[in-house]
Image 1 (spheres, rainbow, N blue to C red):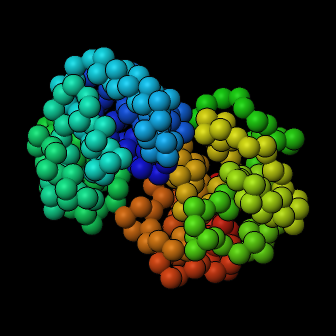
Image 2 (image 1 turned 135 degrees about the vertical axis):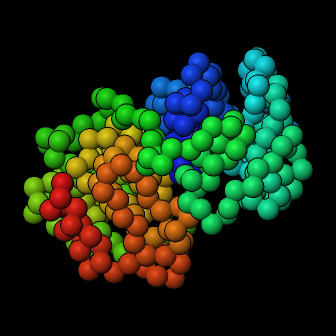
Length: 311
């Protein structure tokens, strides 16, 4: 999901520099709600590779792939831009579209074999933040000059969805969810953050995405006077994030999405360097920690105090 969020400013650049451009976006189905929020995207093409690869040779999967491929090949494209650079996750599907596939050159791409499949490759430093890499790749292949202004994610949060049983303008979102145990932050520290938010007049809303995470969310909410919503879709979660007065989350796509909406956000990195994928957005954002550098409770609370002063 983070990769999808980080690609949004490249779309804003293309729309701004090429009036009348038509953009379709191929994306993993669970994340299709995110590009749908960008007014510059005409059509979202949701594909289910993560699901299909588990039963690749079954008749239903083959039928689903055929239907998706037919939809993908409905139009001729002047350019097919691969921002991800992964052989099976993006290149394989980009080649199915009717148009020249372009991407990073061999020294810039995430998987070098992917560069062999492009009609053209562009050199973009691997030392740049993911948002900057995407913007520079689009610029190199479409020929526009990048603005020196901050990246424009170009999205507004959807309305409606789940509502906390408090003033919706007084919620803070905690995101203690992670794909791996090494990314987790101690529950007692989450509770301390939630308690500080409560004393600031905000109600912590603790998100979750699996039964285990749901139990963790319930414990954190109980310790901090917070609330736990039911299991939300990506679109429903986006609506909650868009209303948050403050977001504190692990290195997960939803934390990045909240920052893209311009909400004040603190990212907690316990097993990954934030330098090339830290939080980026038009609001107050901070990325704490790194590989083998779990941020302390004191460091997160100190950053939170700054956000509470300037909000």
